[in-house]
Length: 385
Image (cartoon, rainbow, N blue to C red; front, side):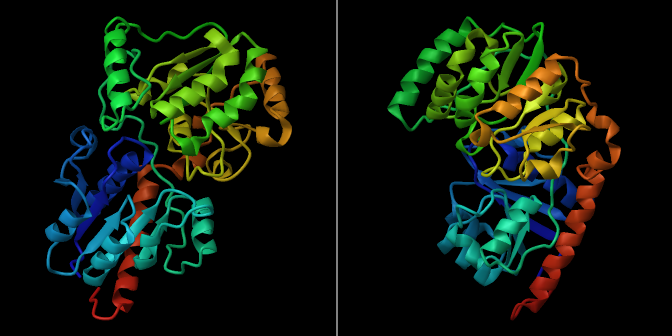
């Protein structure tokens, strides 16, 4: 096996946490002296500004092109988006196939993973779910991630952008997108300024795994009782996700503002008093919560994995009970404490905690993981580590 080349695969079309992860994993590989090739979708328009220098970007339409483009020599292939069963089997027959698992497997188990030689979990929560599915070739440490809020983006004002990720394959989305574009022309100069009161923020893709609409179905009536609390939402999602979230937030009225996805989230976090998590069980890590703490903004999160791995109660944020268990009573009590003058923690003072999410710590985990992958490769019939 060629030991200094790593072929990464990320076929995601939309920008999210897995794409940020691809960025800092590539940075670690390059720092460790590896040649990095990334196979990415032709439809994804963000890679050139996101990737570090030195990554060779190869655009493809799907797994079939990747199979043709991989070298004849047995090589290491690392996926950030799991290959389907047929493609995974074909790659594994010729190469050493390793994959990051970015979502817990409690309610899902992609068929392609059965052909992988080695798996890497982004959190202890995900690691436990992988083992619970019976996989044995798993790196024993959670990989966690890097607090990397700048992501190569430049500065600039925070201005209102679309909260929708329009699916141009759908006629409805194309028509709605045209209508929204006309409206946005008159809104594009609206700049963010913090309002008086307590400012909570969502900084995240508005995807189903976050379960924001379900959570705010219970928390919005609580928040509506406190008009001095503002909710600022920075992120975008599909039409249905945004529609459902808006419906859940209706009780809050003008307490809520949508700002869309921002290219420089490092400028967003310091404008917020606290960053809110979504519901926990479908979440794998929560890079947004790690980034917020790194920027000095504490978080409010449900007391459950994976958030209990990434937040220290009272030092880098506060926990509240899952609102599905108590109807939001714990969250209401927390709001009363915050509005009553409870001290706002500075996560940057929890230096040892944040060090786990530094680039240096991640780089060392990557080095140990690659050693484990090499040992696995050596045990495979016909594979030379």
